[in-house]
Amino acid sequence: MENQTFENRIDLRELQQAVNSIKTEIGKIIVGQDTMIEMLIAAVLADGHVLIEGVPGVAKTLTAKLLSKTMSVNFSRIQFTPDLMPSDILGTSIFNLKTSEFEFKSGPLFSNIVLIDEINRAPAKTQAALFEAMEERQITVDGKTYPLDAPFIVLATQNPVEHEGTYRLPEAQLDRFLFKINVDYPTLEDETKIISDFHSKKNSIDLNSVQSVMTANDIKNYRSKVGEIHIDQNLISYIAKIVNQTRNNTSLYLGASPRASLSMLSSSKAIAAIKGRDFVTPDDIKLIAINVLKHRIMLTPEKEMEGITANEVIKQIIEKIEIPR
Image (cartoon, rainbow, N blue to C red):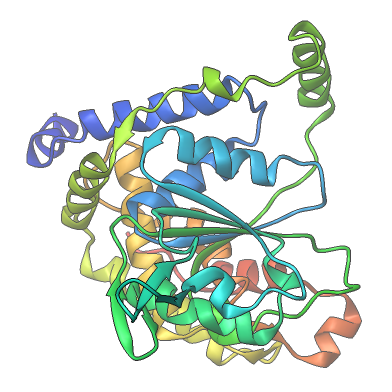
């Protein structure tokens, strides 16, 4: 009966239906990777950017591309390379001989979903060109500011193994990503299915089989519903305690920023909505905590030498804090 009253407060059936449709569409091509897909959908609902890290060949780029295909929005893909200049992504002013005036020709960053492949291959100057777009949803070129159409989401991929010809992303940029998702190898069962599916489809992948199930207006409506999701004051304190502990931890050289707290709030609300609840539970917060925090903290050199990972430190912090009842 209690559930029924919650059900009536915010109607999430349409949102849940859309989420299930996205999962079904992506599932036509991608086998497994359920966590990554759910986190990507949560990021769309929470209006956040995502950094996807994994070795080559685990379908990072393909999944991001398929996600965009399930939405009737503009999509652009940028391959980052060491010689990429800021004007290559932002756009540039071109002199028009007919009018004798400069005209701005927008670059690929002017889109709704922007897939940046191998983001860590471009130098700092080009990385910095993303800062304003990611945070303020606008781009300034030659002193003129151009607002970006909503939704604006950056999905960036990087390979954790190869370091030749790569640049470490600045902390200020990492902090602008809502999630960092690590994509693992598929299980033996999933791998067998991937091979069987590929064989039965005569060694080809038909991306056109994926249908669009959501418009830009739908996304706007679902986001406002996510904003209305209820969170108890003691859960807000729980988020604050987790983030605060990253700043007072002997294993960490750099703790998470207040932006991390806000990211935990918005993404836990998105997860609650995906699960059909209009209230956040401690489990929602625990589910997103690692993906929100791991790229925003830095281990001390000693802990790195010991082989401790950011994930382990975050888990220890969460275990020490009492779960609100």
